[in-house]
Image 1 (cartoon, one colour):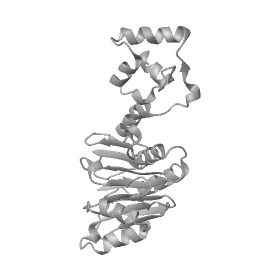
Image 2 (cartoon, one colour):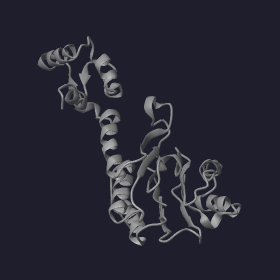
Image 3 (tube, one colour):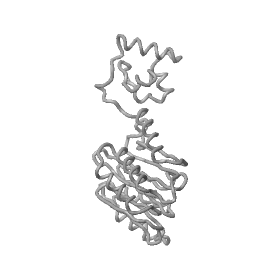
Image 4 (spheres, one colour):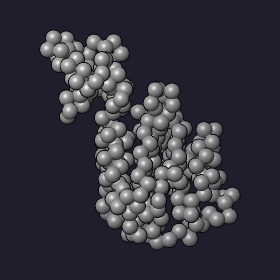
Length: 269
C-alpha cells in the first residue's frame, strides 16, 4: 500500500528512505536507517521487525541481499511482504512477495532500491529510480525529487494520505551527538508529498549551513541595524532572539558576524 525509495550517498556518508502511501502515519512504519550502517523500508502488510533486525544484520557487516534473504526466509508471511535495503557499501536489494497486490514490484541499482505495491503501474517505481539516478545534489533533495516524481506518475492507486523522508548521518543530527540529519513526516494530508517539501524548506532555513566566508561582519551600520531589530523584538542579545526562532545553530559562535539567512529572518524576510 506504499511506494518507497531506500538510498545512500557514500561520499556524504548518508543513508535515507523516502516513502508515501494511502495509509496514515506511514513514517512510523516503513523507514528505518542508521548512519554508516544502511537503510531499510518494510511495507505491504509490513513486518516492522524487518527494520531493527535488518539494521542489526547490516551492522554486523552483511550485505543488502544477504540481509533481505535472512529476513524473508524465516517469515511465514513472506509472500505478503515487500522490502528494500541499502547497505553500508551502497549495495542494494528489493523483495516483492507473490501475494502483494498489483501493481507491485521493484528496481535496484548502485546505492538505491525502489519498490511499491497497489500502484497505478510500473511507471511509479520507474519514476523513483530514474529520477534518483538522474538528479544531482544532496541526498535529501534527490529523495524528495524522486518521491514527488513517483507521486505525480500516479503513486498509490487508492489515493494519497501520508509521506515521510528520513536521512541519517553519523554526527549529523541536532547538536552533533546523534545521526538524525532529517526526519520529516506528514501523517494525514490531501497532498502529503509537496507538504514534506514545504517542511524541508523550513528545516533547511533553520538548520542548514552557510559557508563562513558568506557571513556578514556585525560592525558599523549593519551592527547598529541588528541591535535595533533585536531590541524592537524585545530582546537584549541576538542569541536570545535566535533561540526563540530556532536559529541558534546558524549563529557565529564568536558573535562577530551574522549568517545572511538569520539576517533575513530578523528583517522579516
